Amino acid sequence: MLSLFSKKPVLHWLFLLPFIVTLTSCDSRTANEVANDKIKLITLSPHLAELVVSAGAIKNLVGVVSYSDFPIEITVIQKVGDAFKLDFETIVSLKPDYILTWKGGTPLAMLEKLKSLNLTIIETEINTLEDIAKTITQIAELTQTQKQAQKATAAFTQKLTEIKKQKHKQQTAFIETYHQPLYTISGKHWMSQAASLCGYTNIFKDLSQQSATVTLESVILINPQTIINIAKQEDQQWQKWKSLDAVKNNNVILIDPDYFSRPSMRLLQGIEKLCAKNI
Image 1 (tube, rainbow, N blue to C red):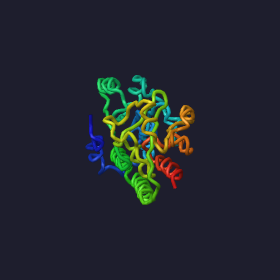
Image 2: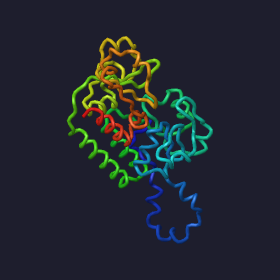
Image 3: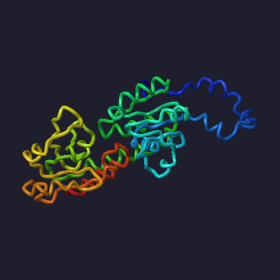
Image 4: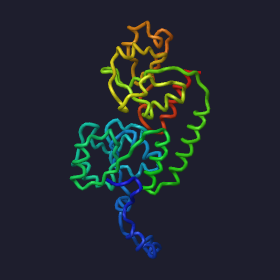
């Protein structure tokens, strides 16, 4: 497994530099052949595809997994499977230089299979909000698109700084990432950090695992002031518990997972929407 700072060998390019002018005028290769000289990337998570675009490298992206749907241009890129099953034949046929995976999100069996096919795996890891910008920069190092990436990371960092300066009422919150069974995250997760920027303290911040199941009884016992429901549709089970402070005070907040469960630049929009609920 290589570091994100690893680069494709460039010795042959150095050798050809003195002949650039000549090659420009007499190169008989087709446009497709020239394009194939670019670093080819496959991403095994929707958020990684977004980060490749933010790094200015969408032209380097030859394969993505299901639910890679932003921006719209990504939807026409070759699908290579999903979180549970990959099309290894298609992956090999695309001849990727690097396959970007997500630590903790890509099953070990998939990683082992990809490595057995002599494919180069690069494992990315995002634990903090700041890691989003770092990962964009690291991808740009692979694709030599640092100039485009710098604009994206500067905008991300500036907006994050502005959000951090905002003042919000302090409230306890249950961060619900799935409804059945109930899933939540610990205080070490970047989603918990995102919620804290809006004044919300994760009631399960001391969990030993970054993501884990919890019982309904434990949530009711702690009685959070807010429930942050990260889903497309509201979890109706909470309305059965009128004694919960979050329900009683109409503080069950629905946040679209596209804007809060993907560690990409769109997360800033999710944070702003959440913060707007706690002014």
